[in-house]
Length: 362
Ligand SMILES: [Zn+2]
Ligand SMILES: [Zn+2]
Ligand SMILES: [Zn+2]
Image (cartoon, rainbow, N blue to C red; front, side):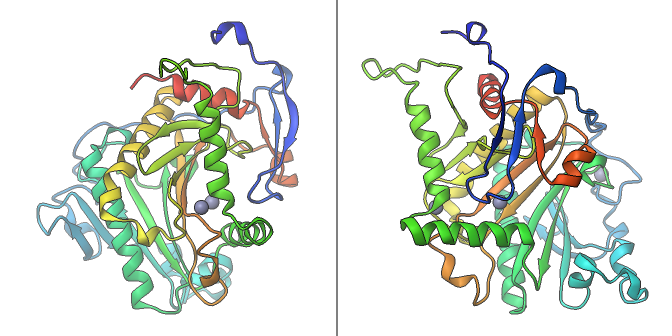
C-alpha cells in the first residue's frame, strides 16, 4: 500500500488527551474547516555575527555579567545570563504588575537566559549533536543548581520561544529557565492525572503511551525478512527512535504538529538525565526538529521541558510521572472558538502529521 492509495478520509472527532482529559482536542480534517489563519514562518537572519546583537560573541559587555559560560569563559559556545527584561524589573516599583507569573518571579523566583550558541542566526536543527548534548547538559546543571540554591523552588521550567509569534524578542537563538516557588497548572494537572492512573493500574501512563506507539511501529516490520514495510493508514505515532529516547506525535495534541520527546526508560526528573544519555537525547531531538523544519519550513515554535516538581506534594510521584519535552510549532493563530472554549481544533489528523514527519529523508 502506498501513501496515495490510502487517501485519509475526513475525520471529525473529539480526542481525549490520555494524560490530561480536560485538555482534549477536536480533530476535524474536513476541507471546509480550513484554513485557519496561518502564522507566517519566523523571519530568518542567517548571519553568524551581528554587530548590534547583545547575544553575539564580542558583545558580552552588553548583557548582565554571565552566570555561566560553557565550556569556559572567553571562548564560550553557550552563555547564561540573568534576564533583565523590564517587565520583571518593574515588579517592585509597580505593584499593579505583580499578578500571576510576575508575582511569583518577584521575591524568590529566578529567570535566566541561555544563549544557545555563539552563532547569531543558527537554528536548533542546524546545531551539531555535540553542541545539543552540551546544551542539554547545561540546562541540567542550571536546573540542579536552581533547586539546590533555594529550597523554596518547586518547579524549574526550561523553555524556548522561536519567532515573534512564539514570544521571542531577540532573534539570536536563546532559551530561558524560570525557577518558581509555585507549580504551573498544566504540569500540576499532568502530575495529578498520571498519579491517579498509577493508583488504578500500578503503571506509568507515559510508559504505556510509549509502548503503544512502539507496538504500532512494530506492525510495519516484516517479521520474516526484518525489512521495514511502511503502511501509511495505520496509527503510527513514532517520529524518531533512539536507544534511550523516542519522539512521538501525541494522539490528541492541541498543536497540529506537536511532537513530544521522552526517555524510553521511566524517569520523572529531568535533573537525573545521565551523562551517557545526553548524546542520544541530542540526536533524537535534533532529528525531530529537522523533520519539523523540513515539513513546516522555518516554523515558529515553543518547546518546554516538563519535569517532576519538588516538595512534599510532589515527591511521592516518582513512579507515576515521566519527564518529557513538548515541541509546539505555531502554524496557525488560535481562533476565538479555541480561546473561548479551550477546545483546540486540529485540522490535520495526528496520524497524517506523523506519517509526513516520518517520510522526511534526513
Ligand atoms: Zn546575535
Ligand atoms: Zn514512565
Ligand atoms: Zn507535559
